[in-house]
Image 1: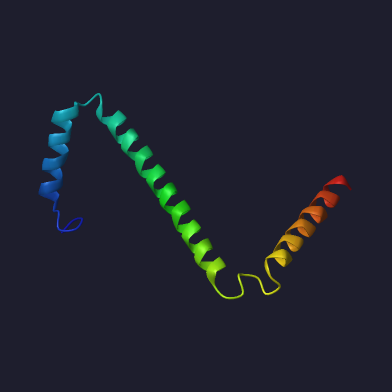
Image 2: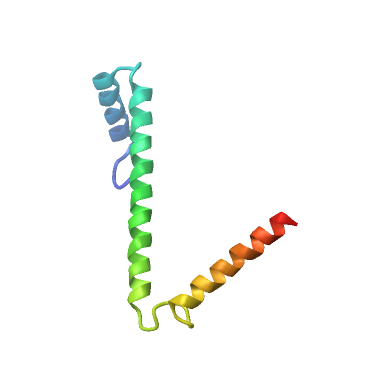
Length: 89
């Protein structure tokens, strides 16, 4: 059994239909375009998921870091200053 109930014979028929529809010369172009579309879809899905997770995290009581939202900003700026100091030395 193949993908979700699709067997080898069904996949072969689908491949032959695509080959007849687009031709052998355009088949790589179609595959490349489909791959690019799938990558962009996954990227957009991850971005939306990250935004939803961030929104849910900020809505929780306490709002994130134990010291409040300013504490996280201070630590981040301190890390940035430390790394820039190391580069100049």
